[in-house]
Length: 107
Image (cartoon, rainbow, N blue to C red; front, side):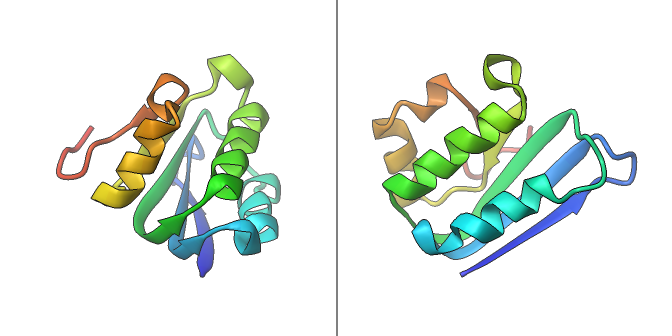
């Protein structure tokens, strides 16, 4: 499991990339990925393209990111999720809380 983050050159977008299992073991790294950034991004993107697993604690971490980013007015996009991860997000109704980019689409 690895969590990396990168701020866009203009400082407006923070991209957090999850590799491997996204579970409670990623909690501190995930929080650090957005709390220890010098910029104040306008938008957040969580790249789930390399995430192999996602559990309820990961869903909770995404909700914490949403709160950190401004709650209901937050601009948080979840991208590149596999079919299995996408099903978990859909069952959890996360499409109501986040912009979810379907695999194979650019947007």
